[in-house]
Image (cartoon, rainbow, N blue to C red; front, top):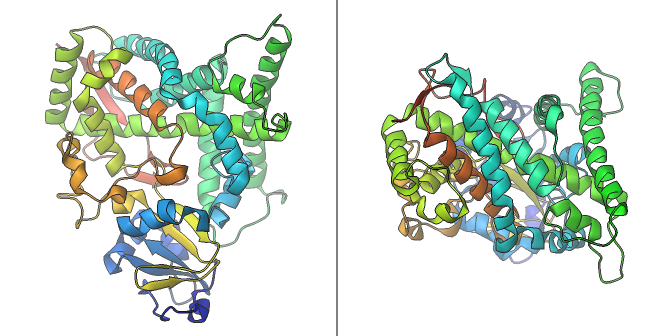
Length: 465
């Protein structure tokens, strides 16, 4: 982390310092962020739009105002890289795929992957999503009027199935349970590592490191099996065939020199696609079920829209434009519980945010969770009110008051894919079943790499009449 005491050397900028969030006399906010990251960052936002957080003798800047976030992610995005501790630790799992890469490497990969997420390609993924949603709805029939169950694993399974089949042209099949456990353990390990006071190297044979290496081996075996299976299939074809999944596109892509992706590049992208392509979707669907189960009036309004639009049949791609309230429910869910809750960037050159200097090397942190709950931007910010996303209403807010998929050139490439999948899954399940939350309180958010509901989502379901 950059030392902000260097800020006095920035030419032409007054050496003003942002307010410092009060913390432990020795470690600053390190322990507070480990114990309560969401609460700590929310308290920082109360101090100001730009606040210093101290970690031992190093400091970072936490920004919460939409204009500052727009500056970092859009206006001056080339000056803010992903060369931060958070991304370097994540690379042990994702390698240097699209999520963690930077600079020219990122631009090359983005160009190769962009065609797979164009509107006409997305339409081809809808049947896979709809089929998976119908299968889950049929399986839930046995749970009608039964005991409370955890719906989060079902959301993970369906999102994993869709990501593997639609994006990678593979079927994880019997491996779903084993891989889901591996993903959960990997994200928990990385989450603990991100907040650790002391970072032990991964080669040390501690119990935690050995367990993480075993988890990595499970995921690595799956990824390599997917890649090798596709390569064998390509060798067996008499002539090139039209392909629709992302893996085929990446394997056949060539740059201007005629060079394709290396084995390492392909592995990193497949790992990123598989994990990012299902984890964020599964998390959002889990939170949506919890919120609907706690808010019967919203759940009833959603059921009325599904009945009016679908008339008892399962939703299809052509229905999504008319499922306006369904989309509003998902958007409000991601406002309250954005799957990726915080991010960091490092300034490459001297800059400024508002009245404050940002010396080269400074790490800047921002959080959709915090900004999307700011009282100065949102009325009743902690309440679940899908109506705030009625068409046209968001135009009154700054662009980066709401950014669950980030924004600017590095906006999530799969946002259209994710929204289509979530509308189809939620519409299929909720037009057949009503949900109620099986606990008195909402699950507490667990802020590791993604914002998961701690302990799962206990729900009971009944047949919708």
